Image 1 (cartoon, rainbow, N blue to C red):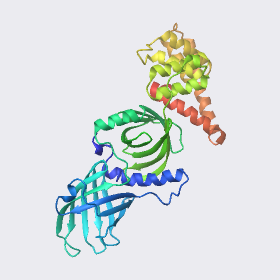
Image 2 (tube, one colour):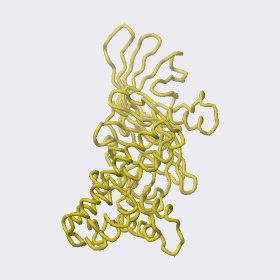
Image 3 (cartoon, rainbow, N blue to C red):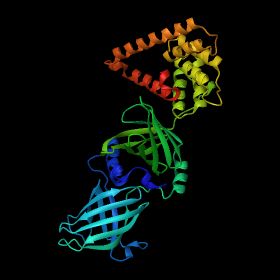
Image 4 (cartoon, rainbow, N blue to C red):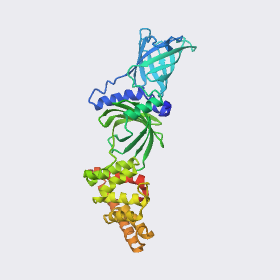
Length: 413
């Protein structure tokens, strides 16, 4: 794993120090603690003109304490009021600038190895000159979560500590994020009107805590998620960034291990089977989704009948090959129940003679029904726009449409 690939340095700013400091404040606030007193990030520091600070167990004489990108120095040899600023930081590189009250300056450039930093430092000889003196420095983060040491270790850790799939919700919105992991790397899709896709990188994965970096694949936006685990659920704080506004917004997120299969003997209600099938479809588990939709379809759920019919119609998986007769059987039921997508498809099947004898009159009948259904739905949406009691229903219906549209094709929904 190349740590710098998580997100560009300037875009994520100081990924670990800035974000974790801010996330600590948010997490404290969500837990009912004093959000005005976040736990700062602290470093014990050694610097010298020789190699002594690069040896094992160096003499750490100073302590640096950061709140976000700014920090202060506590050291018997340092002037009171010395200011530190993190200029840039990725997951393996850091640059810190220092200004003493006297005007003397220094620049520390280092490489991060887990919780340890080593590198070069350049000091100005005095406040009155621009001449620089070079040396070495090292530091230990005292309260910074350890990053993955290498790809092999991180893959093993994440494979043991993190589920392969998580169903994610954030910012008070619907649970519409499908996260899938392979080792420390993952992908995510948020099912909205235009699905959002991103790559994920696990920065930290312990049995009870997790830190994940996200980079969108289209707009360059990014986010960092920090959370704790309780049973099968993660929850915590998220900081969102855009290219021109790093750390511009924050909020809360949760994620849980999704149920993606249905047992026909478990007496699931059609709504529950449909919901589980939708979740399976979000993770591209076509066969599992089909099994859930079939349970709901057999119980008379029209949307599930539509899904079963479309899966047969398109032949999306090797386990469920294309079968126009089965497709027509289920889609005709859904069409007669008033589902627009089913009516459109049945109209096409009658026109082309797919799974049923060709019949232009019935094709026109179902085509007209679909057009009428579309007009009625548009009117219903307009009438419900200002009714708060329909907000949850609209969100649920939209979510189903987004998921099925993304999988089966936007033209059908």
